[in-house]
Image (cartoon, rainbow, N blue to C red; front, side, top):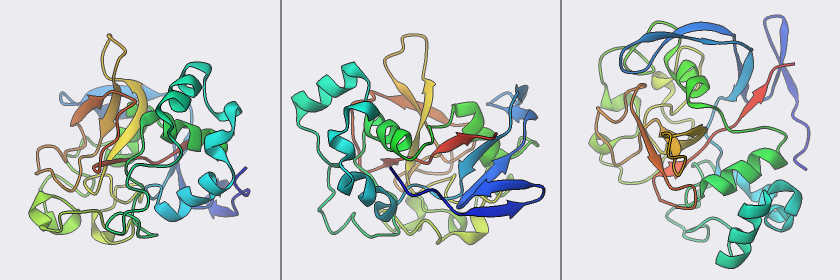
Length: 235
């Protein structure tokens, strides 16, 4: 298992290192800014999971630990011979402080299980990205290509998860607009064949980078534009 994180003070709470406490309560959610209420406090990662953070999961045998995968997913993983993220050994995508890409929803979920965490729901993700006031982007209502890794940045790839310090959310989370889309635990629709993706990626323009923007993907699929961050119940 991942080493227990050091604890950091955040007000009266003890927050796991590199996570932030998101308080329960109402916030403005979705395209129509309806009031949505999250009933329990939770933690969420300040940064996307990087290659450096993902590497110990591989080295610890996470891909061979059946306890981290559901029975159905384990059968799929064995059949497809999935043993590491796609493009894991490609130098264009393996910088230690860049988000891990080429991970399916199932791999992200297994990593979260290994780390003693989970993937956020899309409501939890959006509150962490948007705060409570219904803003359009993590930093406010006006788009700024200098505050995120997007199509307009011209970078054409991932960037360090600490690069855009002026684009953080109201709770201090980085890259909640751009860099890579993020897997969420929620189903995209009632068909339950796609998982929600949030946040937009380095290939996207301003519309896709809005906090309310959502899409979905087959949980088996992997892309150079998808990564994830973890959440954890506050106890």
